[in-house]
Length: 217
Image (tube, rainbow, N blue to C red; front, side, top):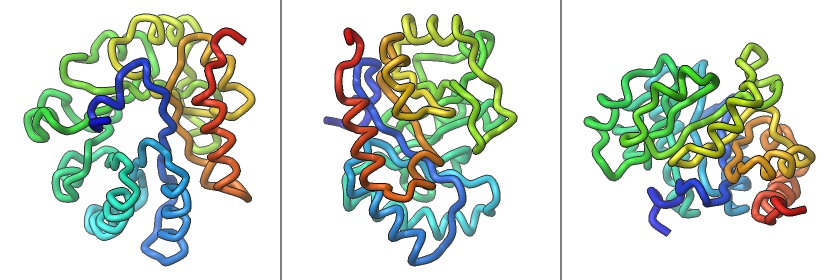
């Protein structure tokens, strides 16, 4: 399946974002273990590293993603996404203009945007984005100050959004089924996977739950 087409609103996706990253053998071994499980999307995300550090780490993560044919997304920076020839970029509310990003990246790259409120949703140019990162759905220790999406807003997004809504924030195995009944198909994880004592087993359980049709159960 072409990478752009993966973000069809009907497709079931497991999306992983890094939290703390480092240029170490241990870090890359952990990343490779995650990629070996067959996750759909990998996002390089760090709020603490400078551009040059992210470029070095990103090059190694990009090679691993290519090895396992995993979509490689860079958080925040169009410049870094271009330098790494990433599959796309994820833009937060303060990370720049979608129109500018699309002009720089071209039509064959993936652009995702963050969204937490109805106002933000109404401002999205859906002709230029491939998916919407919706969250936080629940409280998450990764971003404790994140806005929690109002239930009625989440329901509206899932019913009417023309691109994939990737839900993030406090997503766990025991709440995926409830979200699927509302129309959710794509889910993003950080600490649930990264902090697991058994990463492979955790991802296998998440994949089984996400790929299983729970909407009528």
